[in-house]
Image (tube, rainbow, N blue to C red):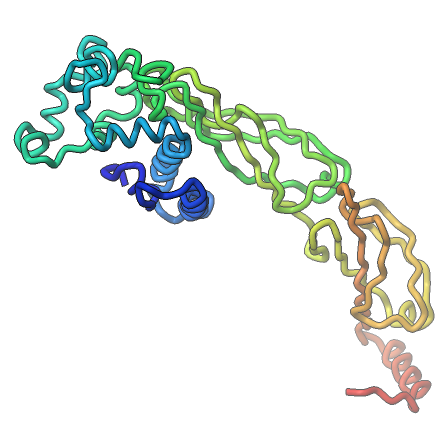
Length: 336
């Protein structure tokens, strides 16, 4: 992907509409996002995709980039080569040297053979080199801003945080440790450990994201940091399942509680509740406790799914009790 121009990176034609570009960008982000992609180079590909999109989504930046693709050596002020584009010689700024370009691409093949492209140089020297290469470009605020080299927001970062269901009911404070990328002044990227304190919003549901502004990757050339998005994974006991804000909890009861009805105390995520078991309850039926689910904006309900447990026959008395029960209900007909 590094050898392609921005249109090639996004997989669109040069005359693609804004809607086509946006649609393609979203598809690529879903495909190569490091959280879902198995591609070992996913981080770099996402960076290239974002860089390409940030340029050609902007009308002015796209026009300048198109002009550069059509004629990479076009003069902006009457002078030829790169000095004309930036308004002054790149070599005077110390960002790169003409000899460096020849070393990368070769005198004859790249320049004499017609194989040279502007984005080849861009890939070879990286964004940091272009940030120090030029002075004021035509229509730009400084350096090579229009290509994302300076004053660009850092990448957003994504992670997952496990949160106990009880914390979702009450809201809670969590601390997480992350290994985050940090951009150095010379353009290199190192990784540092960072501990963040996070407030878990009361009522957040499974799969939702918490956005921490400015806690993502560092920006370029003084640009703002990206954001950190934490996907919430709610943990809970095995007898519980979640459906949005609704909570389903299995409640084990005895045969006589199911048959005769009874009142039992149940430990639920919202606390211990007294629950009335209706007479002749069936295994698998649900008791709905309105508003006792996750306390989201639209609070969910708590459903207690009844599960009748038959006591084991481990003594003679227990066996006799079952024999008496069998005789008492000898006329009972069960559809099988």
